[in-house]
Picture 1 (tube, rainbow, N blue to C red):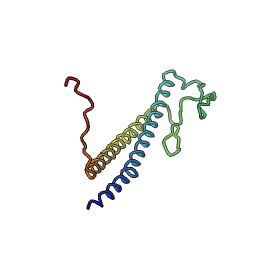
Picture 2: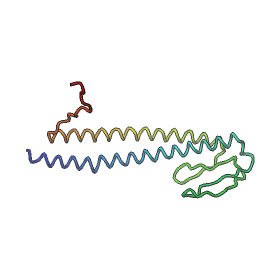
Picture 3: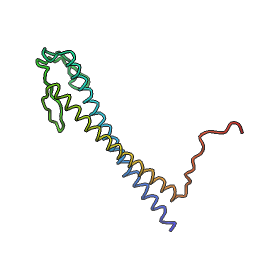
Picture 4: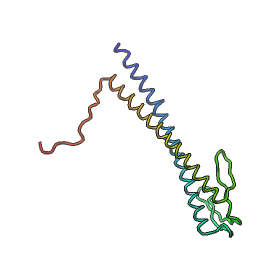
Length: 155
């Protein structure tokens, strides 16, 4: 029976390193991607609100556009009353400014729901990792006692 313990330990360590940690990495990347999308939509919301506050919707709007790698070109927008917004899967929809703000509100709410779900999945994977680590400690007979982080200076 004692010869099977190292094999089980190796199997659990392989499962931990190749499956659980990889799942955790993918979930954290997905979560970061969602946070990036939320930030972009909130930035767009701020820009739309500034355009509405300054009432550029009736006049020509001059701006600079990032064409990639922080290279900007000057752009003239003859009608700033409408805006194209990415709705996903490479599709853009033309919205009036008020419609765009409503869409952004709904889109960020949905993205926040996805972030919440992903956060719960991250917590589950972290709990599984902790469970496997505790099982490995128990199988190997390693105590889970943690030393105190401080010394008693009065003794």
